[in-house]
Length: 329
Image (cartoon, rainbow, N blue to C red):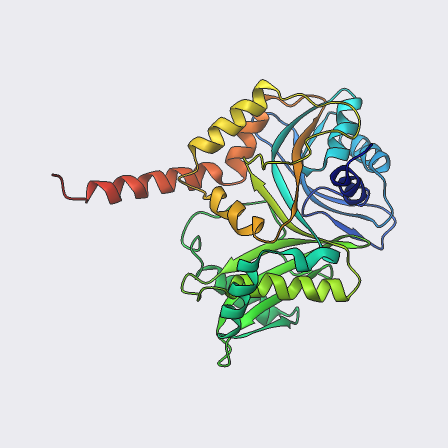
């Protein structure tokens, strides 16, 4: 008998597209991509695709546009299985947290306590998509813990377009404590893009922001709310790949996770996992897919082009400087 977790995962992936891609009322897809310098593969990092597009249609469009091969990240098990069936290579890169909005009341007691604390400081409101607010969000990024550090690129949609909505936690004096942007990924599903917290934000405001926005989307008829990917994690109970062809863990995948764990000093993905896990999500696998082959050079490309290399270098230098100033015994 198929377990309830597998049934839920099947329901989710029916509408799934790569993370930070959008479904729109259009006839043909529009792909955004860059050419990776070492491997030469085009990396399609985002796209707008027709609302009812299936995996097979998407693959045929990509193969027609990039006949010599291409790379995707943020892929679901369904997409990874299809690539595997076509003889291409895939590796798991992390896990995505997806909240079933019909069971939103099942979040932990600690979340409700934090929401109550956050309520003391401000209210959640949606802000209009205009140039002034775009500038203000850009300025707000500088106030976050990573605001003064090298940026991560191509991993989420940081633009304001017709498919994106923006919510903030604002004080009575219109001081922002947190910012959240959300895009539509399916007929009844949505996906968080930017989750931004002021470095001096009071405890509970981010829980207030996310919980309030989830209620908004639930009341509008959405079923699934994705909190996005956490890289290099393997949550307990996550369904790895049980929807078709079995996907084995490759040496490249093992190496990717080892490198990720080694570089956790630069990017606190464990803290990100703990924050998202509070909302009792279903954790599901996220893959990197390449046609025809996923060369190790392509993984090096991603490490460089996303900004992980520069962030790691910057944080290493910063840590060395900090520890060098500590008094010796």
